[in-house]
Structure formats: structure tokens, C-alpha cells
Length: 342
Image (cartoon, rainbow, N blue to C red; front, side, top):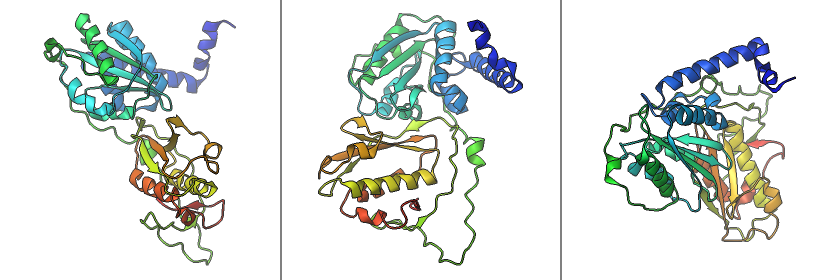
């Protein structure tokens, strides 16, 4: 079977054909507006469509910005990073001479696309990482891109690396002003998701309501919620640090953290908690947090990723307690049950 035939197999079924038609209709509409009426990143942000996010958006970047509009492109593996990427939006918003799109290859979330003139979009990048790929596209919509566009892409890359280059005055004169965006509507799947029904009464005492204090663990309940898929634009919070105040971050602290995170995932199955130590992502807590490995005064970081991020402050409070000598409050109850903390 030839390669061309293999690529068309998706069209051999009604479901595949209809899916392809829907995708083409979306693409055609975006192609008509991108760079002409609206910034491509703004369009994707407003749509909040999972089918047009992540690595799938790379196709649109290439097809619309490079092939169709001939935008200038600069790519860099970040040698250093700006401390607060979202704060760069204030400067980028003044660059009315060019239309600009930034694409950051996040090591955990994949490809993220943003209009760097919009702080809400730029905040989705979270904390930038050194040596990760950043691509900047700059052009003038349907008008031909010029040397100023290439200069803009190069200067933008320097700003993302934390440098403070001199910006030419002509960058501030043009028609590409910032447009007010409407926040993406929650996906129908998320909006229509119903709360998990309460278990039938069995004559046992009703569990007490969860407490807000980070010093007291809430009662345990059996987890019954199925994982839901969020179709909004994915973003990641900044890194939050948790200081280890116990003498050692030992097996008890590990188990407390596992149960806290399990409780958070049970409440918000569409969100994901990432843990980092000394700049590296920890895939398995047990593999790193062994007895004596992480000592008093060490700092563990975490971040939350998803489309509708909630209760991060509460999660941080519980993790702080879990890293202290009061970790035992989270270890009560059956091992296979999930704490109701959120």
C-alpha cells in the first residue's frame, strides 16, 4: 500500500470522514481571519479547541504564517530565561508595527502558542526553561513582511531570554494594536459534567465536612469520580515552592503528598500536578524521596496544568503540612481510600 493511500485511510469511515470535514471547515475559517482580521494565537485562544491546540497547532503555524503570509521566523533554544514571561506583554503591546506570535515547546505540556502582546496568553507559558525551543513569528498580516519583521522576531527572542535590547522607534508605529479578547467559554464536556452522586446510605455515620485548616486532615471517602477530559486551552501555573520543615522528607511525608495529590486529582481529574526538585521533573515520588535524600530546609516545587485551574493555594497549604512533622494527619483511614480535602 502506498504512503498516499495510507494517509487517506481516515476518510474510509463515516466517522473519520466527518471528523476530517469538520477540521477542514475550522481551518478554512481560521485561514480567512488569521493575520488579516486577528492574530492567529488570539483566534486559537478564543476558540479554546483541543483539536487545534498542542502539537496540532504547529500545522496552522506553518501553513498560515509561513507558507501563506510569509512571516519572518526566528527560533532559539533558550540560553537563559526571563523571570516573569507574562510581564513582557507590556512591552510587546507597544509593538504596533508588527503582528507577532510566539510558540514555546514546553517540556511537559508540549507546544504552546501565544500572542505575546496579551498577558493572559503569555501567562500560559508558565515558567520558561533553559535549552527549550522557542519560535517567534513576525509579519504584517496580508502585507509583505520586511526587515523590521525579522528584527522584531529576533528582539522578541532576546526578551524571552531575559535580555534588554534597544528597541527601534519604528517598532512603535503601526496598525497592529492589541484587541480585547473574550475569555474562552468552558467546554461543553466540562460545563455538562455532573457532580458524582452521593453513595447510598448504609446506616453509617455521615462523614464530616472537609476543614479548611492545613493542619487537620479531612475525613476519607471512597473515590468514585471518573476522569474527565478538558477541551479548553491548557496552561500551567508558575512554580510554587514548598520548604521541607520536617527533619527529613521520609516515607511518611511521601505518603502524605501522594494522598494529598490523589485527593486533588479526584476533585479535579482534568488537572495535573507536576512536581520538581532541583530543576528536574519528578515522575515517581518514591524514586527520589527516599529516607535521607531530601533534608530539612530543602525546597520542592510544584505546578498545576490544565484549562480551568482551581484551589492551588489550598493544595499548597496541604503540601506544606505534608512536608512538615504534621504529615501524619493525612495518613488516617484505609489505604485505598481518597481524602476529601478539596
